Image 1: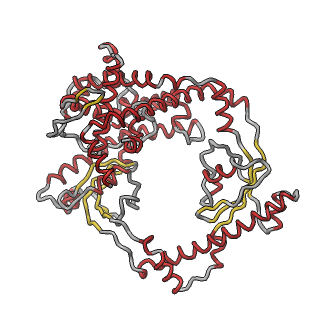
Image 2: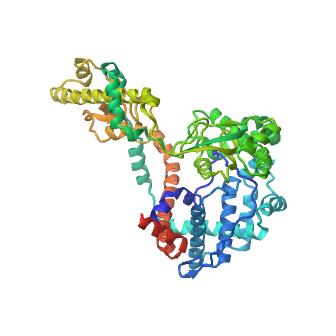
Image 3: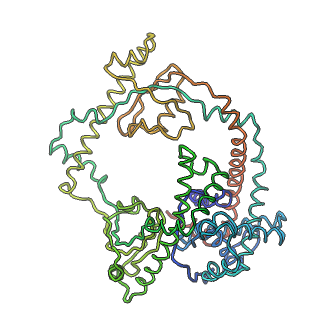
Length: 556
């Protein structure tokens, strides 16, 4: 189980971290009935406690509500294996809390439920003016269409609060972070260095490569497997563009209410609400746009849902029904180029959930959606499926020729870079400066902006090297020395570490308190996740569904 749990560790963080303000909401079809436990009567055991079908159903209902409160949608497209994992994680956590005698009173559970219905996320998603969602409206609009009850909601609120207390209990040792530890970590992560680099790019050597038909043909033969196309799919789709709903969404929220929400979020989270924003004004503008986007997505989803209901209801079931209903409603149908599940469609950015849903389409079950993506809500139909193949050379000759030329040019660049390192070693040993060594070799040293281990990116690098490659080379090289030649896809580089820049003590002292809080939270999460990994891997061995997975993995 350890591989499975780690693979989906992002789900585990849902138990720990609050929902991020700037994130996309994925909406699904209006949920209907769902299989609760199926025909299987053996649900295994956890901590010696035999799991009943009702235990499974309760945990499943709780996870559905947990998912809804983080996405305002139901997990309709989640693979059954992933869904079972989340259900059994809740069963495990609930049983451990019971064993540790962690209880939540009726008053605490009621307060937790009220907090959920009056959260900022609920107010934004439903366009409310801060008054929250009443239990009656929540029951009628959210719970009942999914076959859930107020009792299910109360059980979820109680369970979720219990799990939060369990996390605090298990992760308590993670709070042991001293100010000195935080200061040392700050120094390691924020210590900037000044460096120079000489890049050897393949593009500078392309003119030295002679491309002949015979050479291209031989290259194609040698690397034919690299040009194999995977299984692909082509889809037709109707997209309900979210920007078409912005104006109505803004009016629905109300200008005054919208401004109040933006200010409240910014007061609470500051620049952390939009980490890549440069100024408070930009951060507030981005928060404002996201608030509008969420309401607009809800409206787009409603129209997409109405459209999908008609398409899916047509008989006989045929992919052509999408275009037929779209024509009646004067909606535009578009068709993608063939794409694989590895890359997704070229025409728009698609989420992993979108690609999985499309990959599961068949001629007998050709429809998927509505599915929300950053730019809108999609309803799709299978157009065609194409098997894996290797295109003949005549179809991809230009691409093969370019690959051939680039590969040889990169080799020339790497040879030149390796030769240059010998000159650098000799020159530095003789007391010459790095600039002088470069000039003697007819090269130019490029001054990089100061950077630290926490620097997320250096736009000046372009495609010549990644920031990870630069940091790895720089922080493993002493000041006053040069790296060896570092190969990249583009060719490579040689880096000279000039000096370490002093830390700004005033900035460090200002940021340390928040850093300590952040580190304690991260350590708490790490302790809990490590504990959960061990517990799940041991306890899930008695669960039939996971035993099947283990047997299948062993057979492979």
